[in-house]
Length: 342
Ligand code: DAH
Image 1 (spheres, rainbow, N blue to C red):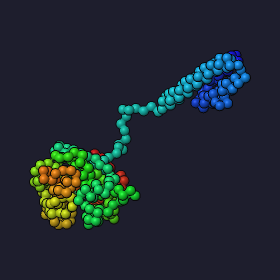
Image 2 (image 1 turned 90 degrees about the vertical axis):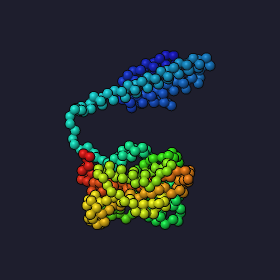
Image 3 (image 1 turned 90 degrees about the horizontal axis):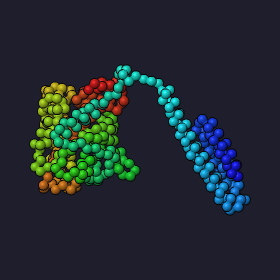
Image 4 (image 1 turned 45 degrees about the horizontal axis):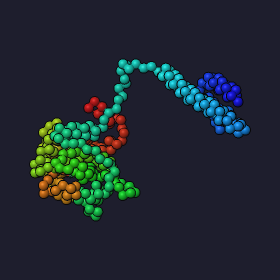
């Protein structure tokens, strides 16, 4: 028996030496160590041996089994290594110092405006927050003082998931969570993609970007709101802009405003872009409604704050003179490539 084991060992070593591929190594494993493999068969032959013999031979066979397993494993690794080396050596050599073709990607105007705003606001102490595009009814409406049958929901028709969640219709949907997360005093902006059920045309899209901002502290007033809005817009448009506030209704602010800027094309004299009014509607805003503060666990007797919901897509259109909002989602390289060197 001992002899058979030795012979089998030698035979195994010779065959393993010849194996050149992973498949060949695997085939060897099966033919020696598999259910019907030569080593396994040896163990079966022990049935008729005496107890002592069985112990002794069993030990040797098991040693052989382990030995064979280890060798096969080593062989497989060797083969893998050799294959990788072969690949690396055959790979095309390239020169990293050669100039590349000028077909690098570019940022969309929305990203450019967003980054610019993020820089402006962080320099004024605002943090930049991220928030989910899928929100629940409470975040999108209830916590913003828009109860279930409130007419304000009509303009916020959106895409509903089967579990009752919605694709957020405005970045205001993050207000409650962010107020809860940080508590007052608080300065934060949160840009994000919004979704509404819209018929698309040159100025309406089902998917667009907004940037929300909130500032909450003791004694925050409308003057603070105007100051920050003016400062931000002057930097974005790189000139002094005039702003005006008109009353506007949004359930989550009181008072609420529409903030207009003087038309940058005609300077306020009146032209087709501003429908001859001299003003462009840009950013709804207002003083955060006490109910909204309360729902976020903030005491409205102690703290006040302002909020604004800047239409990022709209702002990008104004800043870069994009006439059709659908250009942004069209994937049209002719439009996008113009922003390459910004
Ligand atoms: N979330 C509003 C909308 O998309 C816009 C808005 C209005 C946001 C007033 C505000 C605000 O923060 O104060 O219709």
